[in-house]
Length: 127
Image (cartoon, rainbow, N blue to C red; front, side, top):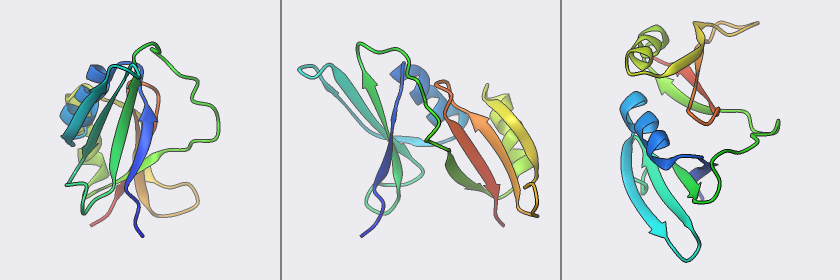
């Protein structure tokens, strides 16, 4: 068994695709509209779906925002340098909500960014 994808509901598919591809550097792997169901799916990631876990962005045509609730935490992405990643994300128009630095009560260096729908993405320095 292996993890395939995590699904996020998004309020504006084009805005979300721009964030995940242009700001975070993922690739659009596939996209399909389902007119009978009034929704679209787009899969993005850093590698092919056969060998990598990806994100499924689900856009319901009649919903432009969601209550994120308090059960979902965040998505985590490994980066070689968290400070440099934050600077690049800001240059590309992304929103850094916690600058790179050591984890509270630990030494792991991390940062947090937020996507256009308010989902949190943790950048974990590895390298």
